[in-house]
Length: 96
Image 1: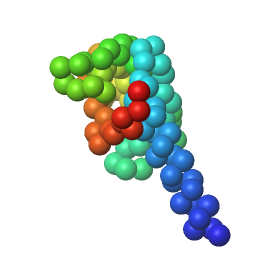
Image 2: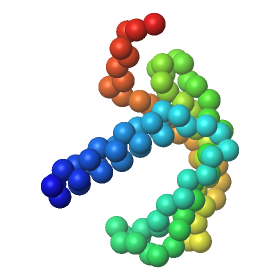
Image 3: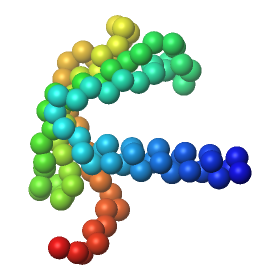
């Protein structure tokens, strides 16, 4: 029973993470736990999505993202960073 509960938890987390990636929008803030050398520091960190816009020339479900990483650490960049999200292995049902 414990294995089934753990498998269900992992499944729900993965589905939620995929949905969040696909529905990215500007002016969203994500909070996380800060790590250093793969160990938790006990601090929180924040990722602020400044802007998100579709990039149709890259693909149907691609978005250009402008974001800022916020942390108390001084060795991390404070300027805006740019990335392109891409949903891979996306299959539509073909139902209109």
